[in-house]
Image (cartoon, rainbow, N blue to C red; front, top):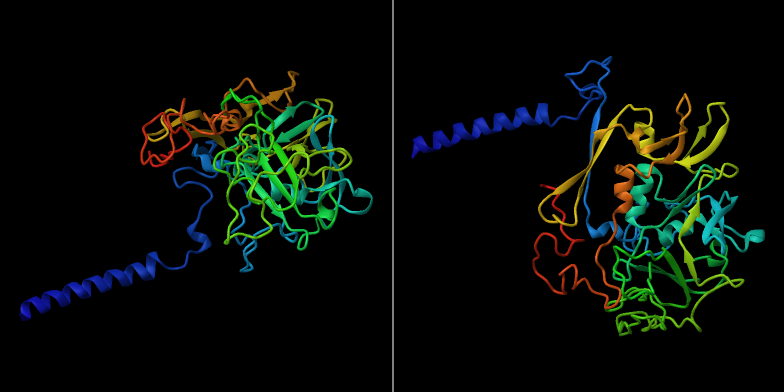
Length: 423
């Protein structure tokens, strides 16, 4: 018995010594001297460029709304269940600009810079950029913005237009209800002050033969008068007007929901919201980097060989660290065919500059535009969207073989699900 106790005591002493060593050396607070900007095997003067392989999933959750209604965004201990004006929402719109909707070109154009993010007075027909970011951005939009400035639907030497991500009419579409008693809707939008409004984000396609990967439906922001917070909580089709195909009574009215919340989709003839004949459907596209009204946007001026500024373009981390060729980047993403078992190298680690157009002169200056003929990081991420959603029945049953209530699926089926990052 004593031998066992002695053995146990020795073991305990050894364990305590090891733990003491770890806690005093390995787990001590790190110092700045513990870090190095240059890898140990490479000298600071080396011409070797750092290599970075970007790895991202192809999971459907990238199509969720960027700003949900159950997060504490500013760390004050209070959940942001609706729009909070003191918070600067990140996105395609400049939070400190007022925008006007262009009914001809179907986009939001910047009109003025505002110091308080409100758009009032003479700007009564203007929208707050901060509010538009909160009400319309998706997670994919935020990622595109951070990496390369956003998805461009127009990319010329004189104009840049960004567009929100594509959202099929399923549960990826999302609604935002605004209670006018707590939010100054008249200072944030052109709509009448004191009016409850509901905004719904979708890409509704009137052609019921289309599937989401072939649809060209625009990114819509739909506006209804009143409390339609369950507009995107239907059994199948979300954000539809009551006269559209796929209209579905949502049956969400009950004792556990607000009495003001409607139990049906809004009526296009009664509940739709518009102003000056504009609306109730708005395409979420925005002109950015207008050289006469830059504001707080992250834009870069591109110059001609003669040294004159030709255009301003939105930029992201890839521009900052790749355009000067200081870092080489590659991209590995999940795929639709091997959605459970691995990924695909979309671009080998190489220079980001091969995705940018040049002016073809002797100096070969960049024009600020993307080269759409290159299957690189930008084009690959821009092509990612929800696949094989069927507009006619609101399911993924046919081409995706992904019926309701599955407990498992195989590669190539339920293409938007599965996130094999560990592979």
